[in-house]
Amino acid sequence: MPLSEASKDSFASFIRDVFAESPEAMWYEKLPSEKELEGLFTAKLEGCKEGSVIDLIFRSGEELMCEVEIVRVNKEKAVVGIITRSDGMGTGISDVLLQSAEEKAKELDIKELIAEVKRSNKRAIEFFKRNGYIEIGKNAELATLAKKI
Image 1 (cartoon, rainbow, N blue to C red):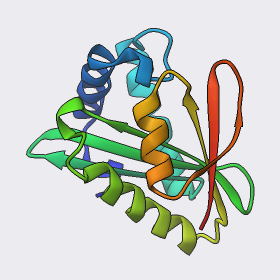
Image 2: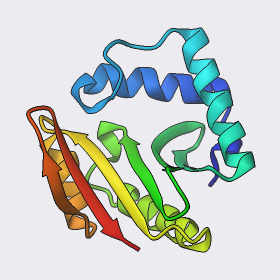
Image 3: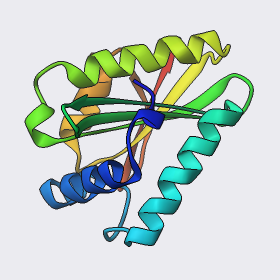
């Protein structure tokens, strides 16, 4: 479902919980403040409205379990990111949500998706590889993976 079906509070709770579970999987160096989380949620919704962002969530009841975001970089390329609660890992939720987001990206004529993942996040690197992404670059901190869609 689209992010718009989540509340600011449920989104903020999701980010706080995932950060507490595995901070190494997050891009944030520190947990964003409540005001920063509110601003992030609002910016994502605005990006979705203008078509530069695809943001889908999977939730169980009121609790967000997984979020995938695709942000257009140019006409044919976009960056993809995914966040999953630890109790949602290994369930296939992330795979289904990523595939749904990729289909929406195709509808917008996006031809290539790029994921930048912290090298320490081996599980995420393997997730993207399992979903057809190929490692195209790496440095001491990041692995860059890409997929033609």
